[in-house]
Amino acid sequence: MLDGPTTTRDDGRRAQAFHMTVRFGRSTLDRDSFRITLDGEEVSVEPQVFDVLAHLLEHRDRVVTKEELLDEIWGDRFVSESALTSRIKSARRAVGDDGRNQAVIRTIHGRGYQFVAEIVGVAENTGVAAMRGDQPPSAQVPSVSSPGEPVGRDDLIV
Image (cartoon, rainbow, N blue to C red):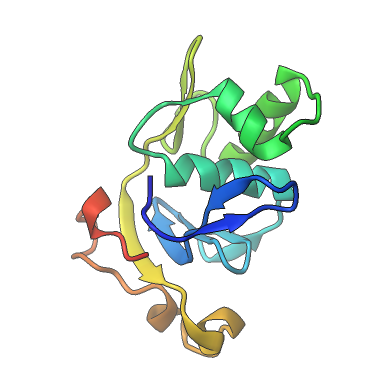
């Protein structure tokens, strides 16, 4: 899990807050602006799809169980497992992945899901300029390693 401050969600539960933009594969996820891009183009997703992807990314060092995702994303509301399956499918589509390739989100049958894409760039989102996007894209998401060189879990800026 990414280290950092916690925040209280709308449903009163505590959640880890990570304020950064992460590049992986052909995609970028910006936690503060709730944006996902694929090949440089913004992809519209439902809030739950974004939350599923962000949670998997945040906990990419392990398999995230279906029960954990249901609890974290939907809280005390009753939803079927098919709702989660639908959000996973949408998350995969948003980042150029699918159930056959599983290059970003891998299904661990009978267990859950794991974010498996290599992280190729991380930038901390701080200050009003970064949130408003006043900086050029290259300044917002600098590569912390050489292109194509994976970024380790300990290299994340939070």
